[in-house]
Length: 372
Image (cartoon, rainbow, N blue to C red; front, side):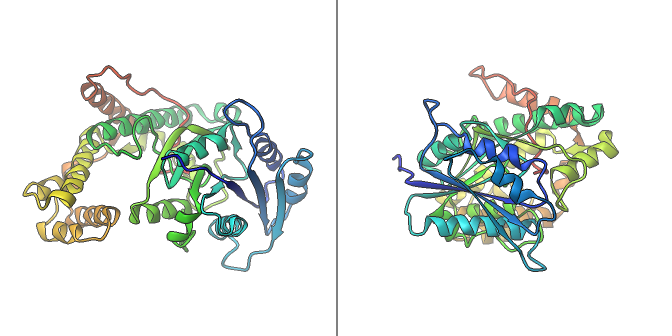
């Protein structure tokens, strides 16, 4: 059933982004719908916190006349003046703006990111199709990606192609009816939408030291809320090697810059084993215990039986993964492998698992799951 979205609020946390915020504001103000006409029924809030430059002024000056973009400045207290506190302040403002709207949608991106013209409409489409949250693709700005050192750019593209192929294989072996192929692997604050109902159900942005966006998606999954990773909603973000957060895309790029040959990831055998294990647990939730579960998870039966008693599938999967890691057998069976080898392996598995002739995913601008 398609649910109408009566109102959408886009909330963007910003701090010391005077150089880039203008592009972000102009892109948000120029959103279009299916027919290319200006999109209506949404508003944008640039929430500037603790900024030492003219981010607020630059944002205000970039707003085209008559477009639904507003700038709000605030001072977050010590301990909250960080990326987690800023994201929470922005999304809480969006929730307050929506009030009691039963079909309200909260959307967020980053102040150094430039959404595509139909970005917001594509996120709305995903939610209208039944998702509780939608995560779009995050790509590097082309001109900044071109300036990356050659080895970093090569690993970035290899990793992007690998992640996409891994998702294709997983979708084949453990299909999710609410997140079917084509999909991608990203779930980060630079490209995220969720219903007001879902935001309130999970208690808003989690109080974590970092990676608040990942923690928010984890909360959604714990509640068995439906997360759609739509490949059609796109933003382009900066390729900083020196980032603004302790852990993020810049961290990953810097790691690749320091030693690109050292990058190791799960090989095809591990990707397939994880997909089979999760599919088996999902089946056991509805059909009862299976003697094959411990072999799938390389974990003790007692721990997996306890996982199956969890109130939601999301919590059951989380407990099973914890049992797998705690048992200590998994890494011995599936050691990480160099990215080039992993890419070749997963592409081969995708080809073998795709008798319908679907193409093997190629490199694109996607970000690694370990980055923002």
